[in-house]
Image 1 (tube, rainbow over the protein chains, first blue to last red):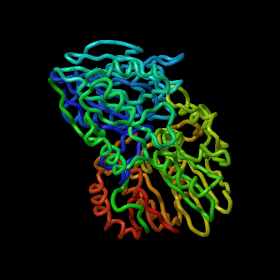
Image 2 (spheres, rainbow over the protein chains, first blue to last red; image 1 turned 180 degrees about the vertical axis):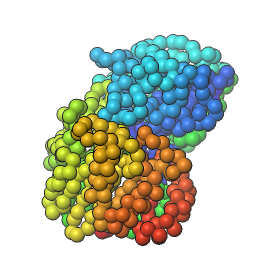
Image 3 (cartoon, each protein chain N blue to C red; image 1 turned 30 degrees about the vertical axis):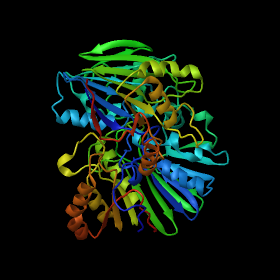
Image 4 (cartoon, rainbow over the protein chains, first blue to last red; image 1 turned 60 degrees about the horizontal axis):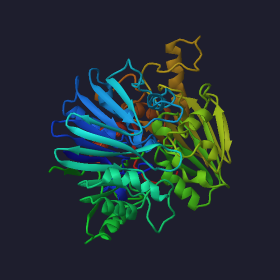
Length: 276
Length: 276
């Protein structure tokens, strides 16, 4: 499978001179299975640009894309109203994500496109644009073509329901844990389970150990610890703090030089191939 | 003109900061408001007036990340046109409700006030006189005229200056479309007359124009500026796909027309500061 990073930033976008290399868009990762399956992890601002690329590749009537949401904080869904393939009739867009307290996933996504906020017709309403299927779950295992997916709840603060994903295709594997905290040792269990032995662990690194922590998030040290314990090939630091400059991220990565597992930082636009 | 960094028209959604004789005024709450807020907190500013054009995402999505909201000593007054349902306050509460945001609006430390004005209202913020007028956009949208120390900045965004009437909510049904269109054009003239700077909605170029989107081209704003004797215009609300080189090309394309109209032509660049 091929993995492309369209958005790497956490909380809120920060496109600026100082964030040009690692990128300013909020979370969005594209996965292409070997049979051309389009699987998308999270729908931050990067999703708009992925949508433009898909349209440029002729993504039109009859095409299918699968958007897996970790949770519904803005930085993980704010690109959806600007995802052009959703306006094309005949396309089939499947959105997957966690249930929401007292409100269905589909209702929550419709809220984002209410008229006060968004002039585009509400394409979470069934009658508009692409055919839409919404799958709501807390834990699940399923396949999309030849792409195997497993979702499990991970801990992200006390209020949010957040999912991590494990994706396998063509002998390659990755785990996606974009927003996660380990305030209780029990929180490691589901993270380790999803990440066990993967080629690539994409992991929250919003916080740093010497800074006041933002609740619900992990540090680069947490990410590396999970990577080591799960026996992964490579840890990719992700969900960068909006204020973290390119130079600061370089310094974090450099601090793991010579470490026994490879540590990198997610940079918008980068592409990686994973296979057996 | 001093530039905060060397290149780039920027990637944040709309936000302008005005320091009018010590009065801190922000126009629109796009993602740029986070950086503006960091500077306001650093300067210890305790009274902030936010003039909101309208409530589409790109004009409000930065608000939950506005650092002054964390300060108990700060008062933020949010001004906009009257929104009957949902109210301005409800729109902002909605943005910060679960599952979208970890912090509800009611939990922010700063004191918040929402002030809904009528079309044509004039009010004073310290010594600064502000006029708000309705514009032509899908959604209730205000433009602002800010007058301080004998200088005028007009913010006329988002609007389709010469298109059909796009949104009738709150408009007097007894007046026909032609009457409203003339009224909305007159509103833009009233906002912009003799302005030092007119900040313009120039999302489109003529060959890209879409009639229902509620945006204009540089052509219409150059004509308006000449008609109302404004000294200069800033192209603003740049289309997301425009590269810096595209913006340079647009400036080049309209240079001679601007000279012919006697209007100074600039394109808004993120980080740039101007004294009037």
